[in-house]
Amino acid sequence: MYDSTVDTPPMSAVAAFRRFVVLLKGEGGRFAAAGTLLVGAAVTEIIAVFVLSDVIDSALSGGSSALLRSAAIWMALTLAGAIADYWGQILSIGMSERVVLRLRSQLFAHVQKLSPRTHRTFGLGDLVARHTSDLEAVEHLTGSGLMQLVVSGLSAIGLAVAAFVMSWQVALTAVVAVPLMWGISALFGRAQTRATRDERGANGDISVAVTQALAGHETTVAYNQQHREAQALADHGRSWMSARIAQTKVEAGFGAVMAVVQVILTLAMAVVGVWQVRNGSLSVGQLLALTGYLGYLYPRIQNLADLVLDVSAAVVSADRVATLLDLPAADVDEAGAQDFSSSSRSVSVHVRGVTFGYDDHPVLRDLDLDIEAGAITALVGPSGTGKSTLAGLITRFETPQRGSILLGDTDIRTLTASSVRDHVTLLPQHTVIKAASIADNIAYGTHTSTRAEIVAAAIAADAHSFITELPDGYDTRLDEEGLTLSGGQRQRIAIARAMLRDTEVLILDEPTTGLDDATVDRIAEPLRRLATGRATLLITHDTRLAAMADRVVELRPGTRETATV
Image 1 (cartoon, rainbow, N blue to C red):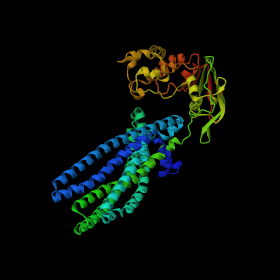
Image 2: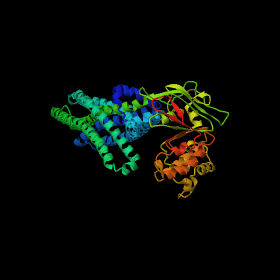
Image 3: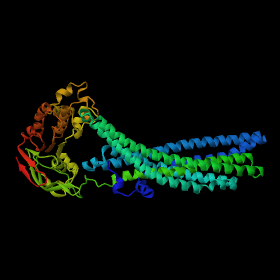
Image 4: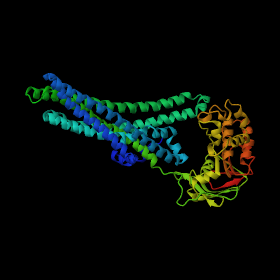
């Protein structure tokens, strides 16, 4: 799994807030409305506690009319506060969820533009974690957490002022401990940052391990390696457990220390308050009201202190999200890029002096290759020579570091990536089946296909017969990856999907990987029909498929050479 801490310094809380506060754009009115309601609810609490002192004093003095009047005011304030708090929470949650939705859409759109190699570097499970739990933590930093800071801060100030009005001696006893509480929270916050960084990384490792194990379940069982996968998951689980225990120690330790401080301060305030009642400086009702103020004040101060820990955890998630957003997109059009257009259905692909590699290690070096219109060019050679890399370059997943790839007579660098892919169809090694109906899977690469066109493509791909035997035919819903189908059936659906796109250029990247001989024989003819009339690049190790090519080219490792076989 990718570890962002290796490549980038940790993000500060201020930097994280500045980076993501833009997500609140357009939410100013709702933020203000929610804040006003929540602050209003807090104000009614303050006033209600003050009125409560009159209720108590009236009850002790025996004044029934004053008691009823004070009680009615107190009940009205309590009801108004509850209503304001309810609607404030509703508005706040709605704002928070819109922020999460906006950030998730932004992050997903950017990740879609990253190269396949970058996706593999992070791992599927870790990418999922960054799109879910990490996003929610970032929202807390800029949305609901900010709201909580504002409301708790203003409430704490109001409660403190009210307490000082009643008795500055008791209030001072309470407020003098605030710097101590903030100092404690800052100390625990630093420990929380370290623990959360470890926990987020371990959580990503677990997601990757589970995803990989489930995706490769057949191979795991076939090779009797269930214990290995279980052991790997257990190792990651122990790392996560250690990180969570470290987190819990921080959180529990913080809670315990704050609880002790609060008990000591409450005792001190009680002593000072009782002393003032005996001296006649406070009434019993005022002392109880003052106790109520301080009872409200401490949770607000506690919330503010807890925010330090929450922010420390959220900054780690913000750092992980920012790491993804800061990666350069591979799928970027040059300024002035044009859509590809051709007056002919015959389009060739010309590779001219292409060099491409990773980490200063060229996979392809000065490669020249022609994929002629209407002909099948088979590309063979050992693994690791860059055959699939070339497929990605032609499809504009990556850009050559040197040299050019021409679609017709036009360098694909000068074209929009989407228009290139409108004219190039890739049948990848791994057959992708979506959780949708068979008809939807076949039509996945198009927008306006009719049912008749879908059926015609399935017939041409030799898939119609098995589809019609299914309970709901073309409307049969497949699960993710289509595991209820055989490998050959999944591949024939993929061939039908490629046929329906009907593009001038076709790339078949190891189309028989993982299939038995009988299935290969079954799909060979549909593949021929698919390739007919197109500029087809057939990447294969299968000599039977290579035999149907018009030209077979061997790609040799470590050199610029290709050889026509």
